[in-house]
Amino acid sequence: MTVLVTGARGHVGRAVLDALVAAGQDVRASSRDATTLDVPTAKVSADLEDPSTLDAALDGVDSVFLYTRPSGIEGFVKAAEAAGVRHVVLLSSGATLEPESAQSRIAALHHAVERALIAAPFGETRLNPGAFATNVLGWRADIASGVVRTAYPDSRVGAIHEKDIGDVAAKILADGSHVGEALQLSGPEPLSFREQAAVLADVLGKPLPVEELSPEEAAERMVALGWPPEVPPEVLRAWARTAREPSVVTDVVREVTGHAPRTFRQWVEDHRADFA
Image (cartoon, rainbow, N blue to C red; front, side, top):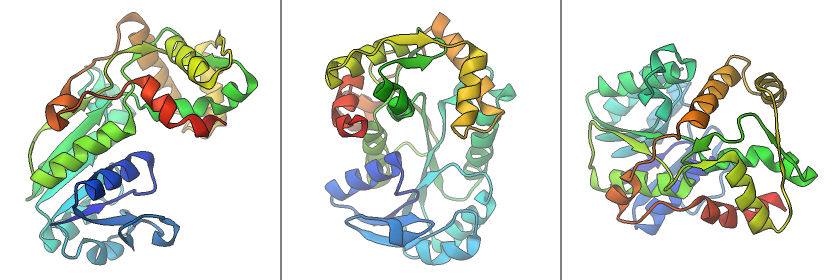
């Protein structure tokens, strides 16, 4: 069985790739430019928005790990069906499972891909993680300056290690389980941004006080970092909600893989070099 991992340069894509390799699976890694991939597997260039690149990437492939990309999803479905793909595991978003998802642009983008795969003639599994621990990489400049600046510092999220997403995806891709299901993934416990900063301070060995920003100040910073202007308001509303009530924590990682989800401290220890 051959598995195609799209987005293999990304944190999650690489985690899926590594977990599949460790399990002895035949893996093919893809990116828009395969020459940029440093992977221990076969690699191929594939652009999900350009169907002409997909036939070669999908040739002989049984299962696919797919990133959400609404533009081009119809072309992907057609190419995957023609190639005889049997199962697609989608990295979607926990936003699609939120009560207010109908009003969320983020959820709408993921819903579009989910619906296309649900209607496809092959099996699909949707992975719906909430907050990613890798979001904290956006604090690197703050950490270097010695002060973490964020709105809603008491917002509590069950941030998930990308390796746990990788392990879940790899297990499902290997055994073809959980077809037709949406799996809500999370880390083991909801930690506030203030508590995350304390863990970072402890592991990195430097004080990291937290400075609270207004929602307006935080939105300005996000846009300056390249976020689309319409996204920060949605993210900030979610943070306001989880400041009142912690985000959902599930045990799906353990149920699928047999091991407990990694802690936020483990994530920081694994990424210590990223903050050097």
